[in-house]
Each structure stands twice: as structure tokens, then as C-alpha cells.
Image 1 (cartoon, helix red, strand yellow):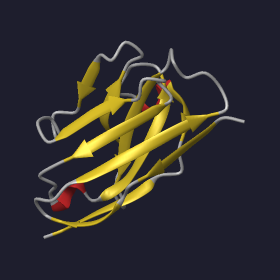
Image 2 (tube, helix red, strand yellow; image 1 turned 30 degrees about the horizontal axis):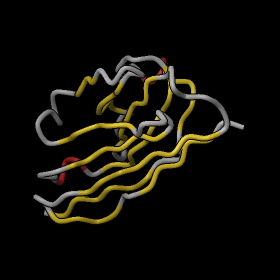
Image 3 (cartoon, rainbow, N blue to C red; image 1 turned 30 degrees about the vertical axis):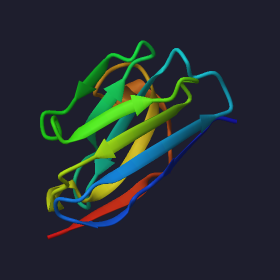
Length: 120
């Protein structure tokens, strides 16, 4: 059974930092990209960042310079370091495993999400 589990969300003040983690289990993920998406209430799921199996990285323009994606050596963990957080970063953050794109439909496996709330 494939499972992705996110952790690290929480409440933080504007300008603060959070580090999200995603642990994948159940199959070999080394050849998959690991992506992060977010969804705010009433909005569509939005691409945040993705990292390929060879560690090529692509960020959404809205987070570039404030967010860093990485993955562990075993390739089955992914991290999202978020700095200089803004209230508009408030959302449920999801990690996903799939193809190296910004489209949610290209990702086959999804975590349950972790809430990030940034207060002003």
C-alpha cells in the first residue's frame, strides 16, 4: 500500500518559518518526482514546488526565493522549508509523487495534507 504522510504544519506569525516533511512508503519512489501543492479555502489546488529524481527543482513564481524543496538521500522523503511566510501562504499543503510537472493530474500518489496557518 502506497502512503505519503506529511508533517510539520502549524500556526506561525507572518515572517516566520516552517519546515514540512513528507515520508513515502510502500514502494520505490526513487524515480518519481516529489511535489508540493497547496489549497486554500475556496480555491483550486495550487502548485508550489517539485523536485525530480535527479534533484532538478522547479518553483512556482509566488514562492520563489522564500521556499526551498529538497529530498532525502533515499529519495522517499521530501522537505519544504518555508521562510518569510505571508498570510496568503495559509493553506493545506500536500505532498505528491509522480511526474516532474506542475500539474496535479500528473501526480499519482498524494498525502492527506497538513495545515499551515500564517497570522498577520
